[in-house]
Image (cartoon, helix red, strand yellow):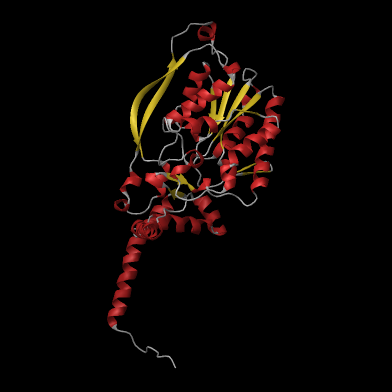
Length: 369
C-alpha cells in the first residue's frame, strides 16, 4: 500500500501562496495590456469562438520573462550535442548558413513540380491573351551554387531541381533565361549569395541582370543607366534569426556580412517629348519576390543598367514569387498596352515549398523570399 500524506508543513503552504501572489502580480499588467489592444465588438465574437483565448496565450507566452533564457538554454544544449541550429536553418561549414527549405524535398516531387509548371503555364496564357510576353528568370538555390559549404548531403532531386524546372518550362514553350551555369562559373570570383542570409548579394543580382540581357539582346534599349556604390552596411542575415544558442559557443556564425549598397541613375539627363509632356512608355514589367523587392540588392537597378531601359516593378517580400504575380494579374497594369514583356524573377526553392491550389496559391510559412 502506498504511503499517504495526511499533513503538510506550513512552509509549503506559505511558499505556494507567495508563488500565486507573484504570478498574479506579474500577470495582471499583461492581461490589462492585452485587453487594451482588443476592440470590444471583435473581442466578444472571438471570445465565443475561442480565438481570443488562443491569442492571449500566444501574447502571454511571447512576453513571459522566462521565455528567452529557457529558449537559449535548450538551443545551446542542442548546438553542443548535435551541432544544430533551431528549426529553419542548417549550419554549414566555415560559418555558412542555409535555409532548411532547400533540403526538404517533398515525397511527391514530380507531382509538385508538375503542379507549379501547370500554374506558370496558366499565367503565360493569361499574359499572352493580353499581348504580353513572359520570360522566366529562375534563380538557383544557394546550397546548389555553394554546395561545398553544406555540412550535410543534398537529396539528388534537389541537385537536379533547376535543370528539371528549366526543361519543364521549355517543354511548355515558355521562354526562360537560365542562370545556374553563369552562377557556378562566377561563384569563386565574387560572392553571389550572402553567407548568413537566404538572398543573393548585389554581385549576384548584377550577374543575373547581365545574363538576362546577354540571352535576350532584343530587350536592350537605348537609355544608358549606371549603378554607383553609395554606402556600406553590415547585414546580420535573416538566417541568423534561427541561431538561438549563446553567441559565445560559435561567435563566427553571428558575424554580419559587409554589404555594398548601390544606386542606379541615368547616365545623362535626356530631354525628350516623354520627359516634357508625360511619362515615357515602360514596356518591361519585372515581377518578383524579395530578391527584387529589397533595395539592398538593387536588382531592378542592375536590370535597368543591363537592358539600358527603364522598367516597372511588382514585387512582394516574404511571400514568394506567386504573390507578386497574382497581384500583377489582378491589377490595372495587366491591361496596360505599353507593357509588352513581363520578366518573372522566380527562386527555384519555391518549388520545394509551395504548391499551387485551385483559385490561388498556397504559400508555405517561414520562408524568406
